[in-house]
Image (cartoon, rainbow, N blue to C red; front, top):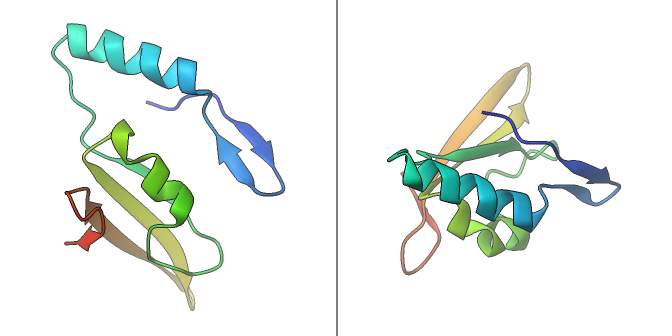
Length: 86
């Protein structure tokens, strides 16, 4: 499910109120978000500070980044240390 975002030169964002409303609706329906995902066009497959700040949106993060002619994908599980790649 895609949510509307606001874009800027620094990135994009879903309004926090919309996130909370969406998560509340899904929780009431017994639906869990398996992961959130987005791209890091600069090629960095590590969660950014901004990614860490948004770890509450799901238990996992999928990052996509260019790798030559291909796209590399990394999955992170948010835990107490909040930086575990699987």
